[in-house]
Image 1 (cartoon, rainbow, N blue to C red):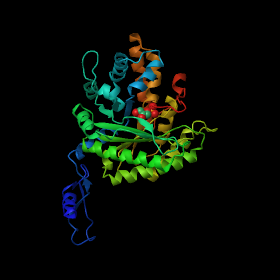
Image 2 (image 1 turned 180 degrees about the vertical axis):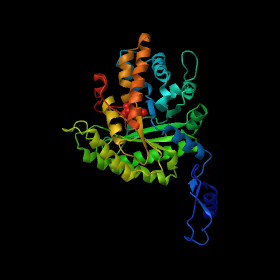
Image 3 (image 1 turned 180 degrees about the horizontal axis):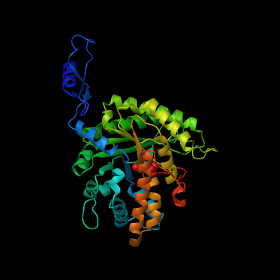
Image 4 (image 1 turned 120 degrees about the horizontal axis):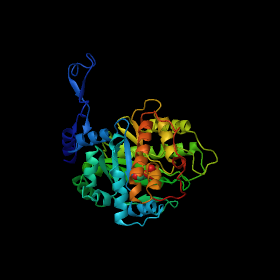
Amino acid sequence: MACASFAKLNAASFYSIGGHKSFTQRPGSSTSLATRTVSLPIRAGSFTDELIQTAKTIASPGRGILAIDESNATCGKRLSSIGLDNTEPNRQAYRQLLLTTPGLGEYISGAILFEETLYQSTTDGKKFVDVLRDQKIVPGIKVDKGLVPLPGSNNESWCQGLDGLASRSAEYYKHGARFAKWRTVVSIPCGPSALAVKEAAWGLARYASISQDNGLVPIVEPEILLDGDHPIERTLEVAEKVWAEVFYYLAENNVIFEGILLKPSMVTPGAEHKQKASPDTIAKYTITMLKRRVPPAVPGIMFLSGGQSEVEATLNLNAMNQSPNPWHVSFSYARALQNTVLKTWQGRLENVEAAQKALLVRAKANSLAQLGKYSAEDESEEAKRGMFVKGYTY
Ligand code: 13P
């Protein structure tokens, strides 16, 4: 009985991928299939077409993601760096500055928001989601509930947020969100233990499946922290292990690969390693790792910046786009898009325009890097300043 209904469900729940619906079987390759067109099966849910379209829109040429999904506590750190109190009006003013930047949509295809911002409006009363839609930027939402210690591990953490995620996701969709983000972390100096990697991968896969079920494209982000004095080879080894496990569980949870986006860390030496790596070396290790682990069905790889300086993050992205890749290779930076903006703004109304120009400079630089056409010649000293903080928590 159970088997019979499963077979029925399978037959009914697969259909062709939009845009590449079918191909014709080569004559002679099989008598019964010789003249028939063959559909490529993909698991269908009510949102399948929309998920694939949303992911493609976000992964469009010359564009990437602006990540401004800092929790209230983390946004407080950004604000205190320029002497501002962590109040709702200050958070709103900062997000308003970022999201109302004229021309942003040319370089930015998606913006990840924190829950507070999704429901907030500008001081003139326009919903932030509508500000984004007017610029053809897809609104996204951070759905994880943050990291807590993982008992039984080597001082590692796990990411909370699966309880109630389906109903929260449905609510976020109603309010305009079309993609989601779940960030968990893996620490190389702490091991990583097999338990921490498995927990990270399983949590991401459950979240991805629940997001797709509710119309949100999941960004899959197992951040491998920069912390440590290990060489780049060790990062490569850990990244391969983590992504192998993530894809194992994504497949086990029937996640539609055409309707996800990835947010990996670049493969670099640990921040405290004695030797720095060049953008070409980082690009080689990172792209090699991804080619070994990520199927080409995935539409986009949107890197995090992880504490690199603005210029480093852009140079590394540019190096990865010097030859064609199987996926759109782009950015989803928070720190590497916001640093000079904050420094320029200083919380003053009279600096808003200059700060918005600073954001456009960074967005355009990363857009060029997505196309492999960036040069760092005219970059400011501030943009070259590293932002790594040991043991940084989001
Ligand atoms: P950065 O590492 O680029 O600061 O951002 C990480 C992140 O997950 C923000 O959404």
